[in-house]
Image (cartoon, rainbow, N blue to C red; front, side, top):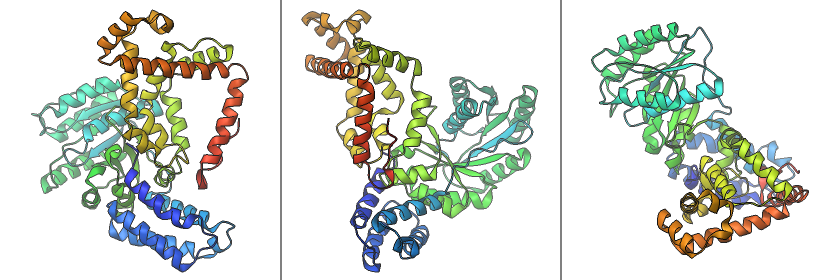
Length: 462
């Protein structure tokens, strides 16, 4: 799902009306701001936040900044982007791990927000991205199987786990975990705390006690982005009661509106540090306000896409394919299978399109066309083939095709479609032999420059 797709579509449509204007006036700005106001309110952005945002945009749009611009329409778009960044915090603020180890990170939030899975995701991020030794422990003695769940997740992300028991008191668990972390020379201890279905004094009292006991480097509030306006209200209550240092928004991939992300920073004064964008343990993204503002306004997010490619793409397989292409060797079905797996690792077609500038609503189109399901179907077919068949697809006769489709739960038409796509890709690969690849990259760069508009313009030329 394209991140905040509903808000993105409405905001983009509102701004389109003014982006081509030769000059800006109070009237055409007011008309556009009225549409922007409706888009933000429908996205569940808090009313005081909407009012402040619109006032700031209007002041800048009618000031010298636009009057001296060669292209007032595009400058207005730039102002909206800039103010969205200010609204969400302007820059990325990472986790604070400075100080004598173990640096303690406490997770707080309501039940169902995804604290436990987020604790494991954060542990994986700190281990792989920061190169730190991490330990997880659970002080949630109320929810059945909470401790066991975190233990399983700890093993999955390959970090230490300090075992606790529902019969223990949370403060005793935390004290023992810190002592264990010191003995094992652990850099970061992440504590998962108990949540409730609603805010109550007992929960707040327990969290205050644990915070006073551990003096955490980070006290992160985990909240479900999909609850919209309630997310902002809940965040405010927690922030008034606890010394929060930052916020993690979960289930952002399921939230088409985006109201929580645009409101919670302004209302609490605390930075959003991470976004939970899926169920997998690596589906946690550092929050970059400038990049998200670009995506919301349909300008793409090339930096995040590049980082994602660098972290999730198998460089060895990519280099191997590139060498095959340059030498003019045959592109076989094993190569196609590898490419499909790489795309799956990247979150599928819609996730990639969502980050490309100038694409508009194509991510939603790809999703509507069930592009990701088609990729899955192709992979099932390829997995049902023998390695010999994938290497030499010309040997696929009627009986082999029947066996493959029966084993993959697909049809002969599905298999024939895949074979046709493979032939088309093979032809393209042949054209890319030698300098052909350089020429193709140059033409793609030109196409992207023409397709991108506004601030998203300007890809590097190869």
